[in-house]
Image (cartoon, rainbow, N blue to C red; front, top):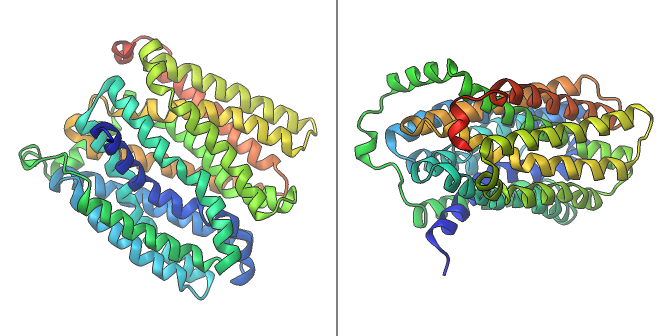
Length: 399
């Protein structure tokens, strides 16, 4: 029998994964979408950017709404909108329509990418929260392992439109989980003091909280490095290195396996060394690994095995950074967990979108711009780690 702790992690992970699944599953199809809709690489990548932009904007609404109305109602609305928009994507006749429906799809997905973090804060703090967050990420991270592989099979069998029909089914499954499994974790008594005006005030309070912002941006640049990989890896590995869509799916999944496996050690590291030292060590390892990768490519070592191997190591370190910084950022904000989760998610996705756009300016058909973008993110994450966790402060209690 599944324990309540594991069941909650499973449900929240599945809900959180629906949005990323809509990204990862169609990555192997990006070149095919461009060919079918007669669109260049930049236009096809705009469908990714539109999704990220919509999620970023929508989180700012879903967070306060989950504080005011409970966690489940915003999730119902978001999942319904996501499902309807997925149907629109499947029927899109041109790239402009696809981008528009991807934006609407992102507006819906924002709920499932915001509210679950607030639910974690509702029920746990400290090491227990880190353990739950890492278990949530275990389920959540199944997406980048299975989605590209499933996507490659679906594309071969039904074309790229079949992917969005599959995602529509995932949206329906998310609605079923909400209706029959997930319990409300913010009862009416806790919502009584929440107002829209109070939420705006809370956003202002958080924007002045250097500790919260520092932790948020440590995770933001860590996630941005993965976004750079998301946006460019299919073109680099399929067009530059000559991998088939299915081979690319396996290569993509290997990095997700590293991320997942190491993330499950977050609770152990937090208990053994404290969350603060865990983040510092993981960010250092990530930065050193990515810097080595950039040095090798700058020296002319343009090899797929070198790229895959060092990304595997680097994203493993990143698996410790994301859950630990999320727990620490929300630790002191239980009464406004929805708002804090929303602002954290928005800032992180906006950072990812900006970095993706910036990296896209330097695309030349090789892996070098992608490697440089990932390394830049690692260095920025290290800079924020030094500024936020470099001296004793509020995180001393996290040891």
